Length: 516
Image (cartoon, rainbow, N blue to C red):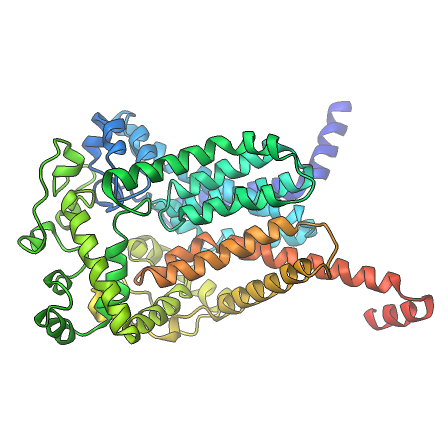
C-alpha cells in the first residue's frame, strides 16, 4: 500500500516530465516504424567537418591535436565512437543522437517549468517544438548541430540552477557546458565564452575567490587551445576556414565579370575566381604549395575512400589540409578588400543570410529523403506553426555561392520572425530596466541575460560571417527563444499582479473587475 502511495505521489508531482518523456519515446518509435526514418551515417565519410575516419580510428589524439579547421570536440566524439566494432557504429551513434534529442526535450521542459510556466503549458509547448520535423530530423543526421542545441539548453538550465543556489560548483558546471559549446562549434568565439566568467564575477555579493577556482579549468582549456591554434597555425579563432565563409557572403555576391575585373586590376587574387569549397586541385598554382609536415591530417588533400557507408568522391576533400589554410587566408584578404571597397556586396550577402536564417530549419539539403517521408507533417508545421506562405518543397542541394542562394520570402517562417523580434525587444527592455534600477526583482534575470545575449549573438554572427545554410544555424537559438519568451511573459504577469496588489483597495477591485 505504501509503495502504491509513493508511486501515486511521484507520478502526481512529476507527471509533466513523465508525459514529455513518454511522448518523445512513442513519437520516435512511430517515426521509425511508420515513416521509416533512417539514421544518416554517411557524414562519417563525407562530412567536411570531420577528419578522415581512418585517422580518427588509428591516431585519434595525434589527428585532433593537429586539427585547425574545426574545434576538436566533435571529431573527438566521433573518433571515440569509431573505436566500436564496425557493425555497432551506426546503432551507437543513432542511440546517442536519440539520447541528445530526449535530453534537449527534457531540458526545454525543465527550463519552462523553472521560469514559472504552468505544467500543462510547458508540456504542450515542449511537445509542439520537439515533434516538429525542424527538430527531429536533426536526430537522424550525424552532425554537430543537435549537440550544440542540447549543450546550449543545458547551459541555460545550469545557469538558472546557479542563479537559484549561488553555489560555485553550479557556476563551474555552467561554464564547462559553455566551454563544450565553444569546443564543438566555431561560431561561438572565445569572446562570447569569456563574457560569462566576467559577468559571474562582476555580480554583487559573490565569493570571487571560490568562483575563480571553480571556473578556472574550463577557462584554461579554452584559452589554452586558442593560444595553441594561434601559435601553431596563426588562426585567430578555433576554425581556420573563416575566410571561406567570408568569401561567400562578400566576394561571391559580385558577378563573375566583376570579380574578373578586380582580379585583372590586381585588387583581389585569382583564388576568388574559384568557387569556395572546390576540390584542392582547383587551387593548384594559385596559392603556395605548403611544405610537408609529416602529419597525414595536414598533408593529405583527400580523405580515404570507404565503401560502408559509400563515400561521395566530391566530399573527400580534407579541409584540414594545409592547402585549405592557405586558400582560406587568401579568401579572407580578398573578402576584406571587397568589404572596404564594395560594401554593397556585403550588405546584399547579409540580407540574403537573414532571409535564409528565417526559413524552416528542416530546409536542409541533407534531409531530402527523410524529409520526403514526413512531407505532410513538415508542410503542416511550416504553414500552421511557423507561418510559411509557400507550400512547396525546400531545395534539395546547396546552390553555388555565385547564384546567391535565392528562394525569396515565400519560404520565410513569419511566425518565427515575430517570435525573435518579440524575444529580442522584450529581453532588451527587461535588461535595460534592470540596468537603470527600475526593476528590483531578482527572478531569473541572469538567465534571461544569457538567453537574450546568446540569441542575439547567434543571429548577428551567423548572418554576418556566412551565407548558405543560415536556417540550420537558427536551430541553436530556437529553444532559447522559446524559454526567453516564456520567462518574459511570466515576469510580466507577476509584475502586473504585484502592481495590482499594491494599489488601494477600491482601485484594486476595479482592476480585478476589468481582468475578469
